[in-house]
Image 1 (tube, helix red, strand yellow):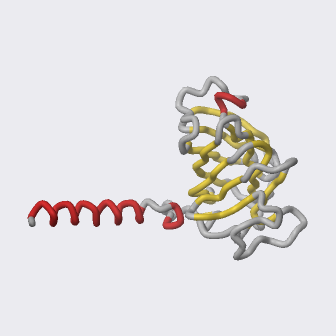
Image 2 (cartoon, helix red, strand yellow; image 1 turned 180 degrees about the vertical axis):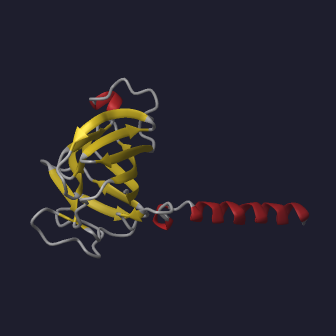
Image 3 (cartoon, rainbow, N blue to C red; image 1 turned 30 degrees about the horizontal axis):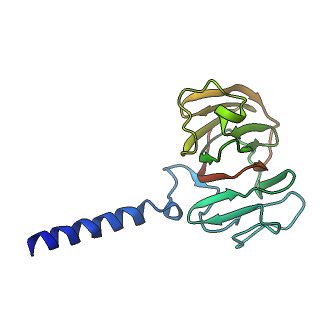
Length: 189
């Protein structure tokens, strides 16, 4: 009976652990706001179109939200999803991404694009040592005085990407499937 009780306890703790690691239970770090609620595309939309408030999928199915993951689904042509809010202050943006083989996407920072891809295959940052193909990777962007310093898993992607004074954050759908999660932003002084 004791071994059954231990097995049951182990299974219960494993289940609780899995549930607490579920993406849609994400809580941003102290001082950060979440740009993606993990459940739907609220706060996002196509430029010039109606926001996708409460919708789990964009009108063309190119973007979807489920279980804490914002997915860029393969499709025809380029597609860009934007926050409905602009960010004129200095900020730190953190997000995790997972790229399918040879996937090509991008993160827009007040309009200019930071390439976000399966870097070792699609480039342009083919020399990265810490990039983990088809696994979750961390992008951090620090914007100070309209200049962005961008890293992937601690390695520099762009040391000084020039940005306009304000603009939204965006994601691009180009080629292959991309997953994003834990998209959070902290305004800086």
